[in-house]
Each structure stands twice: as C-alpha cells, then as structure tokens.
Length: 219
Image (tube, rainbow, N blue to C red; front, side, top):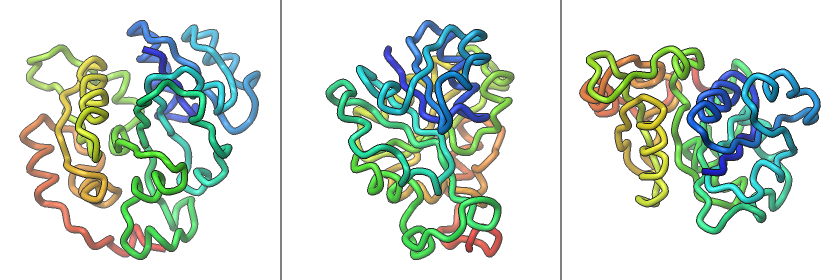
C-alpha cells in the first residue's frame, strides 16, 4: 500500500520503520522540513515530503502529531489522497502535559471525533496507547502466547478492517473497540492505555473504562 505518515516522532517514526520493512511505500512528513528527516529516510528507504505529499496517492494516512497541532494541518491536505483513503489518528489529548485546553474535548467530545472535525474527514483511532518502542520490540507471529493486542475504534467497518489488518501485519492482534464516539475507552487514563496484554486482557480493559476523565487528564 501507499502509506503517508504525518508526524515523525516516537510513534510516527517507528511506524515508518516497521511499515517500510514490510514493503509498503511510505512517505513521511514532519512540522519542520523534509530535509530534517534525512536520517530516518536513510535508515528506512521511505520518502520525505510535506503533509500534502504524504497524503498524495495514499491508501492510508496516519496522523501522528500533538493534538494542539492538528488545526495547523494544511486545509485540504487529503485532497490528493486515493478515493476512500483511510485516515488513522494515533493522537492523545494531554492538557496539562502538552496541549493546553481544548474546550470541545473538555466538554465531552472524544479526542478522535475532535480530530475528525478539525480535518473534515472520518478517522480510525489506533496506536494511541502503545509505547513507541513496543511497535518494534513486541511484534510477534500469529498465535504467539505473548502477542499484544491493540484496540481500534471507528465508524466505518471497511476502514476499520483496513486498520485492523495492518495491525495484524505489524505483528499484533486487533480488537474492535467500537465507534469513534466510544473511543473514550482507549484515551489516556483508561485501563487499556499503555496495556501490554492479549485480546482477552484488552477486551476486559475496554469494558472496565469509565467515561469521565480523571483530574490528571483534564485542563
């Protein structure tokens, strides 16, 4: 597949590494300039570009940037993507730690619904609760006793299946976590966030989540 990754930090960088290893054509962008990605490009063979370049001709676009930077994405950056492009949101809202106050999220909108509203396109929430190192270190073959599972939330079953299949290809099991409006179950502060467990453990953690944000995760 043609995969665009917007954001080359811990998660975006390691997804660039793994997806390139798997043979996908990856174009990666950051908030600075393509030339600042020279080391990652030399390591992976991916292509560097701007956000619009990452989306152009893409089957999947992964948005992996700080929440408070999402409104800064270029208007219409997805216009050049392939029809039916699947957009993955890996982000989290860290009001005290990084992002400041985002009123709509504070008032109960899920993080990924807010992202979807900002970019004007449906998203699938995935990879937001895995430690970046685990993308590299915890990949396992199907059936391995210590294979991790990751939750995936989205409104479009076909888009969600694309993401779940990609997760399986990366060496993890995927668990359907419901719609984007139910994706609060995998936001920071919930039992599944950062969890290193298999399918059963992830399902139990999703079921145990409480919708109200704790004080640590409010502005």
